[in-house]
Amino acid sequence: MDKNLINEETSPQEVSDVNNPSLQNINNLGTVNIPEQKQNIHILTVIGHIEGHMTSPPQNKATKYEHIIPQLVAVEDNPDIEGMLIVLNTVGGDVEAGLALSELINSLSKPKVSLVLGGSHSIGVPLATAADYSFIAPSATMTIHPIRMNGLVIGVPQTFRYFSKMQDRIVDFIARTSKISRETVLELMNSTDELANDVGSILVGKEAVDNGLINEVGGLDVAMNKLRELIKKKKENNNTQVH
Image (cartoon, rainbow, N blue to C red; front, side):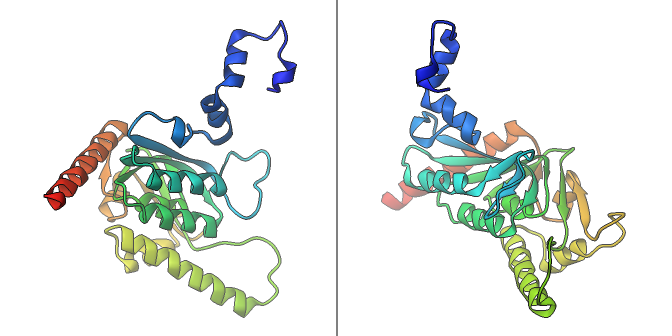
């Protein structure tokens, strides 16, 4: 709301929203800004389509990677933030952007825990495994499938090699940041009996844990408790090193 448009008919709540940077930031990014946050845990939400170098259609609910990157940098730099909870409910999206965010999350020195609610599909899989410890809700799903593309392909052999290298990067990252083997990821990715009109696999809740993709089935309470446990361990380790 433009401050110049505030008049006698504007409600006190609307005026409060205009003057509150945190509420404006929630509207824009779906999260409170780091400097405004009083807690020692930052909540990062990745919802809907992961938007990268190309703008998503206006009807899509999207998480813009250029909004997430500054938050991750701020979490690492802010001494008041001791840990991060990543809440995921995403259909996937831009592969390069999703993998970049996954690498950035994985490289944070602060303890981080991920929680898959609803689903974390496609490039959302490495985003879930990028944390130090991961949870999935019993009803949540994860879809593993080969890289896809839309549009005209000019050089088929060159494009195939590029896609093959990109797929290897994703598979290697997932295997590096979870307990699942590279061979199992490829087997799930190329399964033909799971999806009617496509190649890939859908893992529901405990199936993701049984395959080593996710650490544990659980919800918000256990995820927060685990994060606090990791924060406590990090503090104890730091104190031990100091002495």
